[in-house]
Image (cartoon, rainbow, N blue to C red; front, side, top):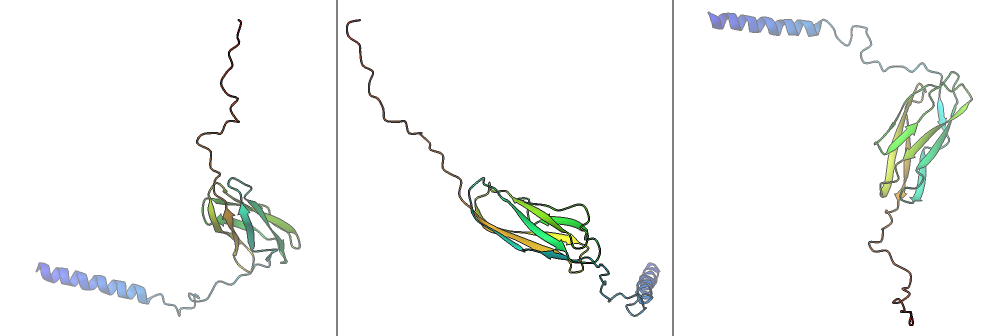
Length: 165
């Protein structure tokens, strides 16, 4: 008797799941497969997408700027600027950029990390062109070696005894 009740319950559960999935399909006119259309008239035009630091001294200036223009017909709103790691810190404008106006995205890289630099900053906005990926590259020189035993100037020799005192 338990087996019959269990089997009937199992079949009822599977039937309910099957019916629930059939009631909502991709052809029901809700546009499940249609891509989201961008209705924004704002657009972003970057002066450059890559900044090459070249060789940077250890602890040197790791700041750079990316200038851009709103080439659209409505205000450009930057909603997020995200560096690819914690050593790359972007600073984006918080106020909307009016059509035809310019602004700057500042990026600071932590130059206390010797070696190659290849990092990105993703800029998310209401631009019809979508996200922009900025790249910084270069090389931070090794940390200068501190001398274990500092060199003294040429020794003056042994002290001289004064005679007759």
